[in-house]
Image (cartoon, rainbow, N blue to C red; front, side, top):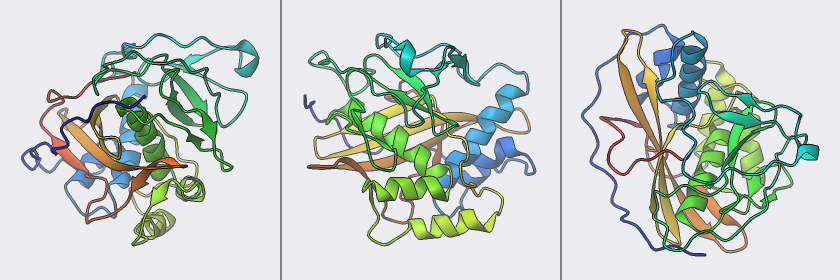
Amino acid sequence: MSEQPTDTQTPTPAPRPEQPESGSGRDNATRLLMGGSILGVIVVAAIITSIIIFVRGGDEPLVPAGDQGSGATAATQPDQFEPDPFFDEQGRVVYAPLNDNGVLLAQSSPATGRSAATAPSGIMLQRVHGNMYLPFSTSDGPTAFSDTGVATGFARTAQGAGLAAVHYLNYLATGNNRIQMLQDAGLVADPQDQLAEQKAFNASNQPGAAPDNFPGRVMQMIKVNFTEDLARVHIGATTNLKDGRTQNADISLDLVWREGTGWVVQVQGANPFGARAVADFSDGWTSWW
């Protein structure tokens, strides 16, 4: 079911953040937000490192644990999952499918009149491809897998666009083999071949580069500016700086709807994934998981 368009105006950028101290994996994300990155997806790999290092260090997560959105909990099918789920670094329940691609959940019609901030129903975080934790829903997809094992069939709704963006961004940020999986599935529009630069950077093994099969995690915050043909999805996380302060990162993806394919991520412009620092997550942001 299609949803009503929302305001597509991009929020005014926050003031340029201060330069944090260098030399720590947990503040690498913010250093990259200052500029000099090849593409904004490099920031995501650094944020994932920040999340894993920060929480494994014995401190409380920056976002309260257990906030998995307002949707109903998806029912599990024991014969399709390993016996026991587990908690991720931020205290969210993750299920481990026996199929490395994941398990598609039975779909039901969502409530009418949902806002773009409303969470999809039946959200379940699943561990796919060994170390990626990605959301599946019972209302907005995914409903299929590509030949390369990428989840597809996300609904033509704000929620479907948001879910697709979270999946696609994780593939773009977790190594060249995962970028190739997304490209081979036909889910990337990259007319200027900008991802070739990203792949070259990853292959260089420089600081901030993502090796093949880099872990994938779901960032806590999301905001969707939606129309039926084009959506801009903002994905956010709070990173911990070395001096004890925190900083908020906003990564945005533009997704275009293509008949027969569904949501396709656009790679274009000088900063195709809109990496920037923001003051807070109060203006239209929400958490679905």
